[in-house]
Every structure is written in C-alpha cells, then in structure tokens.
Amino acid sequence: GLRGKTYLLRLRLEDAGGKLVSRNSYWLSTQDDVLDWKRTQWYYTTTKRHGALRALGSLPATTLGLASRVEETGQEGVARVELRNEGKALACQVRVKVVDEATGEEVLPVYFDDNYLELLPGETRTIRAAFPRQGQVSRLAVVAEAWNAAAVRR
Image 1 (cartoon, rainbow, N blue to C red):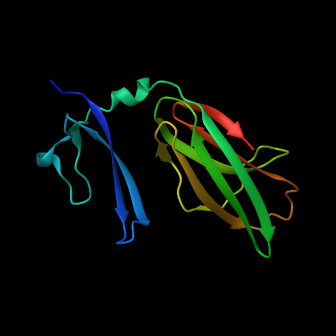
Image 2 (spheres, rainbow, N blue to C red):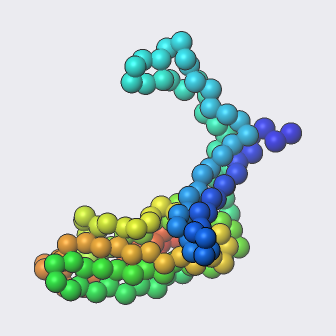
Image 3 (cartoon, one colour):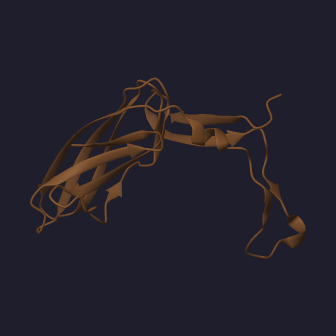
C-alpha cells in the first residue's frame, strides 16, 4: 500500500490575470501523526507517532545554480538572488544566506521575501534579501545550500 510514503504538495494562488500571489509547499505523509489526547496540557499535546517523512533523508543529490547581485544604497543593502535547480531531483529546503566574503560569517539581520524553499528539477526562483548597511564589511557574498545539495557561493 501507500503506508509510509512521503509527498510534496505545492499550492499556488494566482489573481484573475494569472499573476502569482502566493506559493506554499507542504510535506505530507500517508501515515498520519497520532496525538496523545489523554495527556494534553492547555499549551501542549504530545505526539505518540509522527508521520512518515523518512524518505526526505534519502533524497537523491542535486545541484544548485546561483546568481546574485548585492547593492548597498542608503541605509539598506539588497541582494537579488536567482536560484536554479540544475539537477534531476527535487532540491529540498534550499537556504540562502548573505555572508562577509572575507570571513564567511553570516550577516544578520537579513529579511528575505522567501527562504527554506523547494525547487523542482529545472525550476528557477528569484528572491530578495534586505539587510542594514554593513559599514564594516567590505564585500558581501551570497551562499545557497539545500538538504540534498552542496553549498554554492557567489
């Protein structure tokens, strides 16, 4: 049967003209979570058994492509990041970060319009990252990595 299978559900909301308004991804399992309702506290319910998402641990490797442009104007810096899944497998939990090119240390805070996302094979997505101007950092780089893809840096 289907017991133990893992699925990715992607929902897209478009306006009347077909323009994308929202995109959400959900990991689903044919094995439901089982909650321990008898031990429920007003703030917490224990889970007896979790859904079967082990398949995520054996996703085939894929390769990310990355192009980025960092601009610093006024009080804010902005990175425009184009992510590509160049492989034949789903890229799971793609994470983007802005780093100091010299030290590799992550620049914080950064405000992303999307992050920790899934990319289907061949899919491209552009995201924006804004951060306070970094006076002490001479050059910034963007790093992208995924659960099943090595980090790339530009």
